[in-house]
Structures are given as C-alpha cells and as structure tokens.
Length: 435
Image 1 (tube, one colour):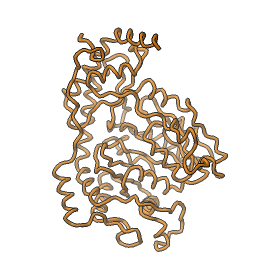
Image 2 (cartoon, rainbow, N blue to C red):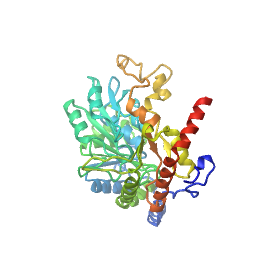
Image 3 (cartoon, rainbow, N blue to C red):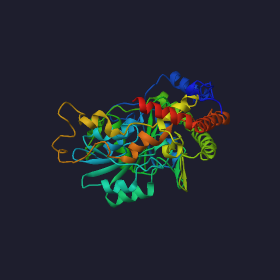
Image 4 (tube, rainbow, N blue to C red):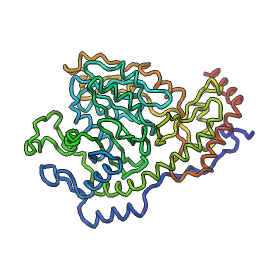
C-alpha cells in the first residue's frame, strides 16, 4: 500500500474534479432573444395585465405545471423568496409555531421569523436526513400552524406519514425541494408532495438560471396569495377585491425575463441531468457499500433519490479513527470530501441570542410569542448534531461531467485510507497526547 498523501506520499488524484456546467447554446440564444426584445422584465407593481409578469415568466410557469403535473406554478427570484411567500400565504403570524428542520440551509427556518412566528426545530432521521415523523408528532402544540419539510440532499421526506399527521392536526405543509430534482415518492415528483412545494434555480442546483425559484401548489387560493406577496400585495388588494388581507404586505420577489428564458431551456434538460446523478450515485454506492464502517445513501422502496448531494455515514467505532481525521486523509488524496453539512441551525447566534428584529428580542419576546416555551439548547436534536459532529461525510461529486474514472478515484481513496487506518490511529493517539 502506497504511503498516504497526508503523510507526504503520492496522491490518488492530482487533477481537480470536473465542474458542473449545464449552460449551452440554447440558453445563450434564449438570452439574446430577450435582449433583442428590449424587455428585461414584464412585471408591473399595480393591478393590470402585467401584474403577473412578462411573456417568458408566464411561459416558464406554464411549462412547470405541465412538467410536474401541478395546477399552479409561481415563479420568484429565489427559493428563499419562495419559502417566504409560502409561509405568508398560509397566514402564519405572531403567536404561531412552525416546525422546521435543524439540518438544512438557514432560509428553511428563517422564513418563519419573517412573519414574526417562532421556528420549532424537530430532529431528523439518521438514514435519510429528513424530518422524523414521530418527532414531528411529539412537537405539535396548540400553537403549531405549519410544517416546513426539506428533501435534504435529494431524498424525499416521509410524505405519507407527515401529511397524515398534518391532516390530523389541521396543519399545512411546505416542502423545500430545492435539492430534489429527479426525486420521487411512489411515483409522485418531489416538490409536489405537500400543500406548497419550493424549487430552487440557484446556480448550484441541478438546473439553474443563476438565481430563481418556483413555488407549486394545487390550491388556487394559495397560488393567488403567493402571487400577491411576490409583487407588492398591499398596492393591489383593493383593486382586486381581496377581503383576506392577512400577510398582504408584498415584496419584490419577481423573476426577470432573462432568468425565465434560461430556466425554460434548463427545464428541458432536467430529466437527463437528474438521471446522470442517479447513475453515478448507484455506481459509487455499489463500490463503497463493501467497506466496513462506510454507509452510502439509503433509499426506501418506492422512492427515487435526486442526489444533489451524496451523503455517506461513517462509523468511527468500526473504522478505528475519528471522522474528521478520515476526511482529512481523503482530501489529501485529492478527492472531494467534507466533514458534515451545516451546523444545526438553532446553534446559530440568531437563535442562541434570540435577536432578530431590533434590539428587544423580537419576535421571540414580543407579547404574542412570549409564552411560547421553545428550546434552542445544544442537544435539542441529537441525531442532527451527531450527523454533523461525527458521522456525515459529504462532498462526493456525482453530477454530469463526472466520469466513472473520477468515481473510481473516490473509491480508491477510500480504500487507500481504510488500508492505512493503523497508521492514522497512531497519529490520532499522538495528537490526543499532545493536546
């Protein structure tokens, strides 16, 4: 066995992994068509035929409903904006609690604070990294208004169980499907499994237009309310005859024509781009599953993974060294690897200090929320904390452009490091002794 690169030996790989590129001539032509038209945005923030956006925005929304087989699609300028309009459309406000995941991008929880409600963090399942249905059930109180679920890394949430729990308690569910293109749950596309689904078109996602997002729903009232919040709702409710003006403070969350034109071309490619991720992930899984202490992503029967990320679970007791040293050794070999994903959200300063709006502790201490007893203490979600601190290894690339030879390098790096665990264990012991 060659000497480990972390100790000065030769690397498994010296070249960088292929970048993910999905923009081609089709997108360039679409952008030039918009430029030639001279109309970069078709929106008007007043009640008129332009209130719902320009030609390409409307075209994209129509294409989205057809592709994902939903009744309504509402474009926005980011998935973060999409989460905000979704929470607002549900009527969430002061005095309400919303159940959220601790292990995801921060916007999936901060969207609750936007409406002066309180996020309640619920632990995740260790095999899928999605919300644990039983933890959801235990967290529901009379103040609970909604649930925000996340299809983390592209694995669909436990839709049947969580939607049943929500129906039992009269709750609405928002599905953050930003990472779940190509994923499905018993034949239904991820993003269409809840009352409202949110897709991301951020530059890092399976398909992208730089920045952008799409909200989908089968509920016409929720769709209308999301369109209102997207575009200065307060200006138009009178002219439109809107009676329920709860959360009808609007924003400029509108998508431009260039973004919509790019997204339309990207949508044509989404199935092929997602299929490559599945093919590469399956190949990697078949090889990594043979290594003791290494557990590739799991998938339950009837479900399809989107593999935005490729999360590996690591068992230090089986391998014999801690996760962070193992990851450092992998990285030294020239393959992408990362310890954990994100710090559990409730450990961020915002939640630890309970400071959001102004200096008085709002919304946590406002009169409508002051009786809500919610914890953000370390240890709140032990599974999420364990994944982040000890078990999860991320970073492996499975997107289009990654070849089988690239995946072989990942496998070879794992094999090389695992074969040198005794040396790494000695190194770990020396580090522990010295302090």
